[in-house]
Amino acid sequence: MPRRQTTVERDIPLFIVPHMIMTRIRRHGENLERVIVRKPDSHYYNISIRTRPVKRELKERGAGAGTSARVCGADEGERV
Image 1 (cartoon, one colour):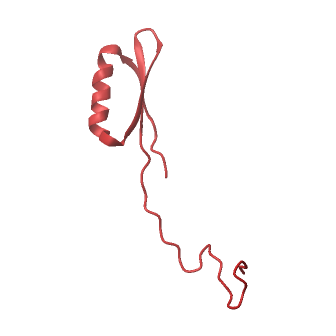
Image 2: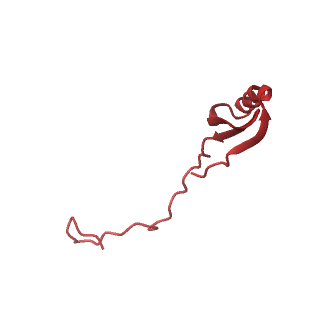
Image 3: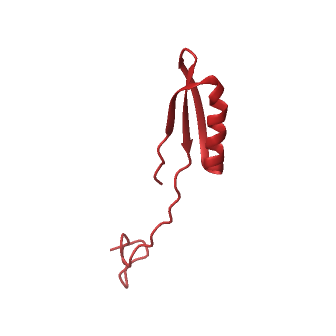
């Protein structure tokens, strides 16, 4: 399954961090996988937000695609 890109917000002041996290939780809901808040320098923070992968349904394979056919009269363990 393909991953969505991680959203990174840089140089966020401390008093805005809770608001940014609350906004992302409301936007992504249950698809939110993790939130990382780091303090690189001074009084500013970096927020990294990752969501769950996008679920896709698998396409059915066509007849014979990726499978081997059995030959009549072949032993049980043999495949052709």
